[in-house]
Length: 171
Image (tube, rainbow, N blue to C red):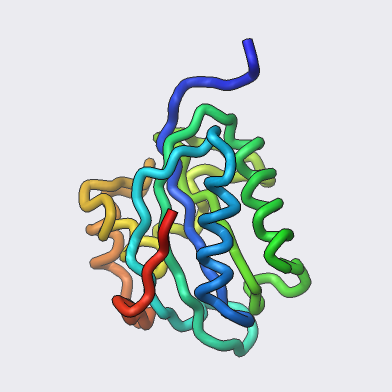
């Protein structure tokens, strides 16, 4: 056996608010899908969003990507962090400005309380910048233990989102 497991659907959130934000998001897509172990399923529209939490900082561009993979979640985490680092991510201030943020939101219906990779993502249900683009590409999506993404989105107030139809990610 080569260490690969069953095929699972993963949901990844992409965000950037430093430098060429669009180039960072496209670089993330390019970096994530440059090897065959991660097969893209869908790319959401891009949203411009106000930051949530953290220090005063500029707006983000955000998107959600779904993919199918057989690689285990811990290997996927290593891959997402490698892509972040390749595009200049520096981890200095929690929820601070960043060139690129790639978060693993869900891996099928798996649950994990591992502090290195909690599944589903512990704050995804509170973040319009995750829920809105995810609902765009999967209207029936659910967060395990939290409920349907559309219902969770309806319960969020005060988070600014602006769909950027002038921007498009490509695999």
